[in-house]
Each structure stands twice: as C-alpha cells, then as structure tokens.
Image (tube, rainbow, N blue to C red; front, side, top):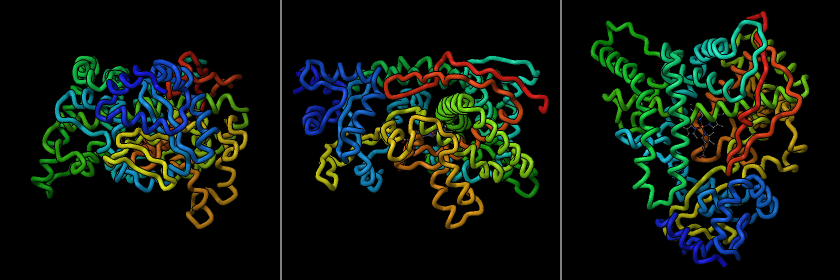
Length: 523
Ligand code: HEM
C-alpha cells in the first residue's frame, strides 16, 4: 500500500482531482516504476522516472499494453498517469473532446496561465488549430516559393557558402535555420531575416520552456504564488521580441482598414502569412481579441514560435543524424530524388515536395525511432463520475490518461528490425503502389503512411483532437531543408550516431553532437 506521505503528496499536487479517491481507484491497476510497498513510493517513482522514463514505458507496454490492460506510472512531478493500450485508445478516440479534455496538458506544460496569460488577454494555444489547418495548411501551395526562398537564404547565412569545411553543434546547425524559415511564414520579410529579432524570438522560446518546466513542477496550490514571479524572465524576453512585431501588426491592421474603406482604389496585396490567417481564420477561435489590437495580434503571431522553433529544430537534428549516420547509399538516394524533383518541378513547388516519397519516408522513420516525447495523447477524464471503458476498466474524474509511444514505435510485430533506422521503410510499399500522386484507390492505402499522418502506430504528432496542427507545414519545411542540404552541401558521414539524451519523458539529440559540412560549388 502507499505510505501516508504519498497520499499527502498527491493531495498537495492534485487537490482538484480528489487525489485520495483517484489514487485508491488506480490501485486496481498494475504500476510500473513505483514500488507501492515503500515509503515515499510516488516520490521515489518520480525521481526514477526522470532517468528511466524510456525503460518504464517499454516495460509497461510489453507487459500490459500488449495484453490490452491499463497500467499506471508517475510523471516527474509524482502525479499518476494511466497508460492506455491500443484497445483503450480506439475507444478514447471515439469520445475524445466530448468526455476527455484534450488541451489541459499542453497548457499546463507550458504554464500557459502565467506565461501566455501573463502579458494581458490570455491567448489559447488550441485556438491556433483552425489558423494552421484552415489557413496555413490549405495555402501551402501558394506559400511554398517564399518558404523555399527563405530556406536557401537561411542555409547560406548559417551554414555558409564558402566551400570550406565547417563543424557545428547539431542543435545550433538546426534551430537557427528553422527559426528563420518558420518566421518567414509567421512575420514575413524583412523581420524573418533580422538577426536581432530572431535572436530574441529564440531566446524567448527557450526561456519560456525552462520557466514553464519549473512552474509545472510546483504543486497546484503553490503555482499561483510563485508562477507570476517565475514567469518574469519569460515575460521580459517575450516583451523584447514582441516590441519588434507590434509595428508589423499595426501596419497590417491599418492597411486592412484602408482597403476595407475603399476597396476599389486599393492596390495592396496582403502578404500570405500567419497574420492574414489569424485575422481571417482565427478571429472566432480567438474571440475577435485582435481585430483592432495590434499588440494582441503580434502576441498571437509570436506565440507559434514556441510550438515551432524547438519541435522542428529537434526533429531536423534527429533527421540529419539519422540520414548521415546511415550507410551512404541512403543520403545518395535522397539526393538523387531531390535532384530529380528539382529538375522536374523546381524545389519551390508544393507538388514537387509531395512527390518526394523517399524523403517523406526518411522523415517519418526518423520521427518513429527518435520521438521527442515518450508519451502522447495526454487527456483528462471530464465526467464527474469518471469513465468506464467497454471492458469494465473504470477511471475516475480527473484521471490523466496517456499513451506509451516508445513501446508502440519499437514493436517488432509492427516494425521488423524496429531499432534500426530504415529510411525507406515506408516508401518501399508506396513506390510499388505508385507514390502519392495521382490519387487512386491503390495509392490511398499507402498515403496513410505519409510523414504528416498521425496513427495509433505512429504517435509523434500526438493523435486525436489535439494532434499537431502545424505538421503539414513542418514536414514541407523539413523536406525543403533536407533537399537544399543534400543538393548544395556535402555532409561528412557520421560513423556512429550519437545517442540521444533522455530527460524524464523527453528525448533530445546529444548537445555535444556535431555535424561537418561544406558548400558545393553548385550554389
Ligand atoms: C516536427 C516538428 C513538430 C513536432 C514533432 C510537433 C509535435 C507536436 C505534438 C506532439 C503536439 C501535441 C499534440 C497533443 O497534445 O496530442 C503538438 C501540438 C501543437 N503544435 Fe506541433 N509539432 C511540430 C511542429 C509544429 C509547427 C511547425 C507548428 C506551427 C507552425 C506547430 C504548432 C502546434 C500547436 C499550435 C500545437 C497545440 C495544439 C493544441 O493544443 O490543440 N507544431 N505538436
């Protein structure tokens, strides 16, 4: 049984969830990484999960998830999480957002109340979904030339074009490039090339994540006391970046107002960027808070940096490490594909990017093998009397449900040689069936294995109601960067892929790993 201290700890960290009731109900399920017989079992489990989160995930998946059983582990704050099996997932997807809260976790994780809420009107991260899906994703055709142009510029800026060999830390080689390209879509020229702005936006994204992490670690009742204080550095960094976006937002609102006043004489073509989509697709979701308020419009635009900078930067770093540590034939095949697409369509064509079948597979495979988070689909049970799955498993109100990603992604029955990076694992079938285009009955079945697709067997984008709405943009961005790197740079083969670093339930590329490259004369 749990020691008294564990109950006290649970009550302290989860007062709203009636922790005692929750804990006693969860005792019915097997626990992984927590010794229920020892004093401070939950706290010990929290400390253990910090170092061994990946192992616990794999153990629970093979012992229980594969037998369609729920199991429990604790996160690094000592709060219990109920891990679902594939069978429970099927049911959870049917009731997602009706009976389950899909957005609480990400806003808790980012301490949104103190970080995003600390500057004025609180802005919801989930509200970006409609802007990204109906605005950005639907307009990728028209946006690709600008994103391609920015990719070329960003690589020349950060990777150079002098033909000399350079060695860079992998993270530095990726995050700056991704930051510039993403900001072309967000704030456009000239700000996307302004080193001061990019430095401030990057600093803010990093400080935000660190601040939020500390606040998230605090028990619920301490957060309102310390949260506003701890958030000060993040608010300060945000303010410095925001000051540079507000004039752009103000100009946009003025121009739109002038056009509305006299549409017949206005010759202004509104740039196709995030601000436009926020104003056109996001107004309802954001309760029209920025229709006349440049500061709030600028804040909503800047906010996406937090989601995009690091997730895409880390994914690109994993991808480069995987591709250039694989046998050299992998990079050669990707380069041939990129050159063929360049000849047929140009790299600035969305159709061309869609035809990069091998690259698409290399991205999906890297995301399968090197997930950023070991848990996905974080949900909280909404009904006051809890929820009972069809097989009788009951989870009380407030239960934190989640999925063990690593076990699924490394399941040999789904992915033979699962621990190997097999870049063309997903494209082989597609090539036999005729890639993605033209769309036909035959190609439909293989399109589900495209890099943008979240599925119960591939959880790197999350799944269900809150799956990443930026994934269409992110995959195109990754393809563009990789195609440019392969065509215009020579990258030294990496003999042994540096191991990723695991912190609690996250994994990041080694901070000391480097990459050596030089520009080719074809620049
Ligand atoms: C390869 C890069 C990326 C990865 C691996 C990634 C992954 C994720 C994951 C796992 C989630 C959480 C899903 C969940 O809670 O179930 C998420 C949420 C989100 N992502 Fe991404 N993401 C990436 C790039 C981007 C980009 C480029 C954007 C924007 C342009 C973006 C915007 C968002 C937003 C707004 C959310 C919150 C959605 C919500 O709460 O409803 N992401 N992302």
